[in-house]
Image (cartoon, rainbow, N blue to C red; front, side, top):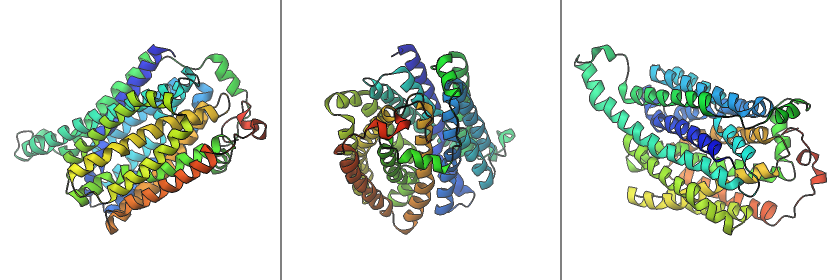
Length: 429
């Protein structure tokens, strides 16, 4: 592995996620300021995923053809612009537009994973992807904490100062939410400059020319379906989809759940997610290397599904904050292990020269879960705070059974039966 390039992509992912997580935990509360109910909040969260569902496969394929660096630059610019738009938002429509802009250009994580795949071999792929997960977790440690502090400063200092005329020139904003949004935009701008000035391209001219010479077919729902029925990569993509569907109901519904079930406010939610980020960093930065040396990837995928099922079931009836902090430990261990190992397994099962395309399809499937998950999960919270946890546990339990039969104990498919996985064809053909 090229350690200098890995460090650069680690920092880009870390800074990008830190800026992103400044504001995302506060978004449901900001939407409530404009009269949004549980369903509308779910749709707002899902709008980003819906846009990413369209944009991620396109960006992934473009990164195979033209390089990872220019696509990462587009993604970071899109995040910057969307955060500026949120800072100036004065209606629900403005929030929806900002989230859609970010979603259409939001291929940075999938392209970063493809970048890691370019630099690693099968022996150290999981460890390399674990660095992306650790950067993700570190971003969510600092991001929500800083966002919570900025939100408190905006609420307790700037808003009163505007109201009494001391800082009247700052009027026109609800600084409880505008300050974290603008702070996140500044961090995203730093990330744009970091990509432009410090990130080397991971694909050679020969690799890009080889991909450009291949016949290109339209990326659409049928192409994604074809990828999901491929003998080697298909079961892994299906596992990824259903696992993420369950987890998305927890992750995107957590702020509203915490408010309804435990009476937590924006700052408390942000600090709780900081705790989750700390757990995630430990798993993906330190534990994953030891786990992959002791267990094969298929076994770890199965174990993560089982652990997540029990964790979500316990989350459903969490009675207090101390109990929540205990339950989040196995939940974070399962999530961190799964996210790292499944991506490693997918890139290994994919055909040559399609890391960007297959990671784009993976991101598109994840986005689809974040269309369904937030809308369903937040709506269920309105009926009973325990419902998303129970449904999520049932889905992950069923996914574990699928992994047991189709991945863990299934015979390896003959590569000849799937020419896409034994040639340089593009993902989803």
